[in-house]
Image (cartoon, rainbow, N blue to C red; front, side, top):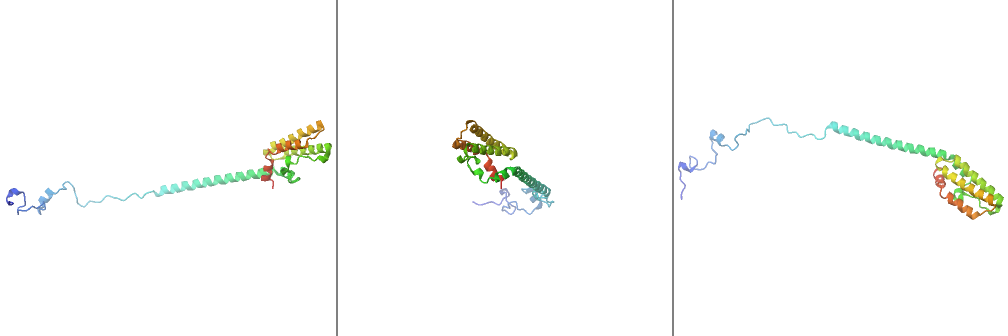
Amino acid sequence: MTLGTGGDQGGSPSGGFDFMLSTDPERSRSSTPHQGFDFSDRPRRDRRKPSGIDGSALLRTGLVVVLAVAVVGIAGFTGFTLVQNAEAEVKADSAAFCADLATTPGVLSQAGFGWPSDSSAGLAGSVEAMKAYQARWENLAVTGPPTIRPDLAAIAAAAATITASVESTNTIDRPGNLAAMDGVTSQTAVRAWSVKYCD
């Protein structure tokens, strides 16, 4: 079988296949597969990418952060100052209380905060000592720091109750009275207060 060279073979005039590679300009324009597209030199569009965060936006963000930090710092300093001032005021209010306790060192470490229980004092001497104890705590309930005045008054009231009972019965239950007073004093904040505010 041979290939013919007639014009009905669809080839080039020379008898081969030109695969549309003709040098004829008219033919090239008419047969180009990219008809409708203009590939002539045209100004390119500005394809620059956005620069990211705007400088002014970054500046505003920085200012907000700085202001927030400043506000928090000022608030913290103000709070610290208020606490320090309050503590100084409490210590000043405790001055009379601390000075009174200093006249009997270690009294708050004793049972009943030094409630008189010496049997050698006799009935009259014991009552006198009880009344002195009562008067001391009554005075502290007036001059002591406001926060613990109720505790100081409770000690004075317990002492008054025991003293009145001893006077009315002319008998002294020394261990029982001491236990009663220790039960009252151990429930108060007096010892903790003195540790914190009495140097």
